Amino acid sequence: MDIPIRSQVQRRPVRRVVYAIILVAAVAGISLILRNMEPAAPLVERASVWIDTVKRGPMIRQVRGLGTLVVMPEYIRWIPAVTSGRVERKLMQPGAKVHPDTILLILSNPQLEQETLNAEWDWKAAETSYQDLRIRMESQYLNQEADAARLESEYQQARMRLAANRELAKLGLVPELNLKLEEVTAELLASRIEIERKRLQKLRESNEAQLAVQQARVAQLRAVYDLRRSQIEQLKVRAGMHGVLQIIPVEVGQQVAPGTNLARVADPTKLKAELRIPETQAKDVQIGQSALIDTRNGTIPGRVIRIDPAVQNGTVTVDAELLGELPKGARPDLSVDGTIEIERLEDVVYVGRPVQGQPGARIGLFRLSPDGREAHRIVVLLGRSSVSTIEILEGLQPGDQVILSDMSAQDAFDRIRLK
Image (cartoon, helix red, strand yellow):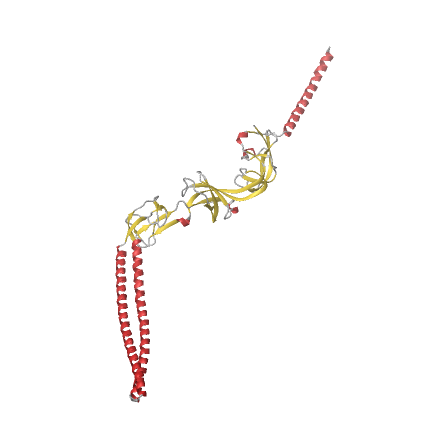
């Protein structure tokens, strides 16, 4: 009876060792399996991500920027003070519609008024002197003409006597000496007539020169008077164009100097858009490119007319001329959204622009499986970009679906599940 009991006691340690070995092997195998298994894919709500399909075809490259509507410089008029003066009255207020003859301000300048009166007197005195000189010279010229006419008459009489004496001399009725005297008298009168004619010509030229000098002085004094009178008239400050009065930076009673800006008038219908384009995108913008301006109350076609060479706060200012009819509510300083068309790509593979997608960059995107339940990370090479689309150079094919949302929270995973 002692032998069986001893055998059972001896087998118990061996069995325990076997169990321990089996347990260790099982733990090691499970650990190995777990280590070789992929980490569990995180679950992502399908409605929380932006999914787009890769396409092939034409793609329009565009850049977008915020901006404001401003009046074109050629339709803005600053009205300066032509002369010094004191602001007497303000007849219009900013915001009023004005016409070229609308009076905005009235200035006063007593000294200018006195100078205008003196200039008028000087001009009228010079005009009177000119008329007096002209009359005296005309009288002098007439006297000279009368002397010339008398000599002409004497000469004609001398010629007639000479002719008669010659006939009588042939008959022997007139001495030869008398005939010679008549010939000498006629020749002398002919010479005097020629000299008198030259004197008349010189007198006419002299009179014309003196009158021209006096007339020039009259014109000079008249110009001074007209200038003073125009300055008096310009004390009534007029708008000078159709538009809206924007600013009157002076107050009643203020003394202003020549050149001081008194008012600004602008035509609010002649607007352009000043767009602020990010400097990284502005390199492709060229003058003449088409633009579309969104005023939040309608869109207006436009055209790029100026690109600012300077960069301010990371943006470049681009001016777009408005080519269409302005929508209601369009006015200066209105905030707008502008889109500029850079170029048209005819046949490219493209997709919606990812959140972190930059032209020429390699980025990781999650591409959906055919059943749409999972998405795997792949590397994609991006090409040229637009506002909302970007060219695909490598990594995707037309028809692929990718997630374009920010997936930085899943950077540790190469696979996700969608529900």
